Image (cartoon, rainbow, N blue to C red; front, side):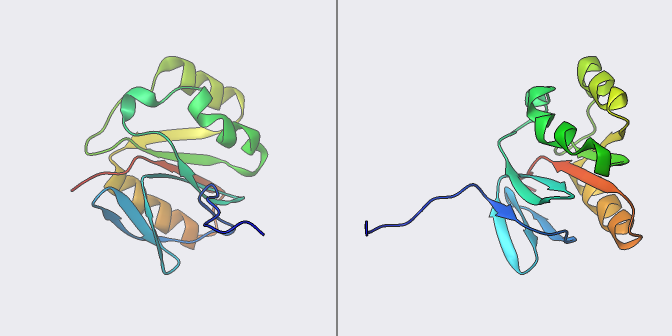
Length: 130
């Protein structure tokens, strides 16, 4: 057996509200994660997007793969509201997903409310420092 630590992609296999955000990460389910997150029907996953310039169709591939289980997608675009690229909005619409972009703080609050209502919601959240 090899010694050392096994590094695996960040993944929480369930749905959970976001308890806190800021300082470059998030807290949920008694855990913390540094970096951005995807909150999907398949669980909460680490997401390699660091700012709004990285919001591409490719960055949303995991969301598009689970489109059948998602009605609403909240995109937390960081410290402020940003417009999503036309190609991304078109791909999500074609997949049957309604999307709303807002600051990460607003997206976290809205996600938690919709999750508590058992809605078919997902969130793509860019980590913020504040």
